[in-house]
Length: 250
Ligand SMILES: Cc1cc2nc3c(=O)[nH]c(=O)nc-3n(C[C@H](O)[C@H](O)[C@H](O)COP(=O)(O)O)c2cc1C
View (cartoon, helix red, strand yellow):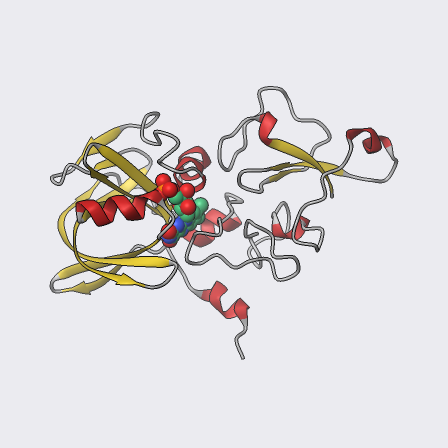
């Protein structure tokens, strides 16, 4: 028997992993970065094979991991966690530095960074586990590090399917994981219509009394429980504009 709730007891931090190969940079949000030995100083990270970051790490043989601060913005986490480096320059809006390998890393909203030389890559099926030796490590601020639990419970963050820890909504298999046991309100999973998708509704029916509506982000699944979104609204999770939201019945 596998009780999927048992997996919710596993604690993680939240990190940005980035790399650069042949003039191409990539980076993504991860919760799977971890120290695995102290002598030598070795770490590992599980990166989905479909993430562009995985192919860049494979080509470069190195990566930088940044521990995010608890105060890190949802724009930063969302930009690196819900968009692909093939489509957007994720680094452009942020303060970026380069490590000894030539890997770019976000040097703001961060607590520390580690530059890692990959020594072993383990094929886990959906993900590659990149094991490596830390060759540079630096404290960037004295802020509290962000935990995965804080991201879900306090920031209201979501986890996309490519994350190792993604647990699909057991009722409907929604595309974006909700915050499950951490908090009940506003989660994508808790808004599921039970059929694996969200019920987009005609705006004209919104006038019916007693029915509550909200707006669901089609990129990350975040739900805003308001009747209307202001024109300049941007998703607090992934940063896309109002045009990427669809109206749903709550
Ligand atoms: C909270 C959070 C945790 C994530 N953890 C991981 C992870 O551990 N491994 C992974 O491969 N992707 C993880 N992801 C998903 C990637 O960040 C996401 O697929 C990203 O868009 C990949 O970008 P890329 O194609 O530029 O590499 C996570 C995303 C979020 C928001």
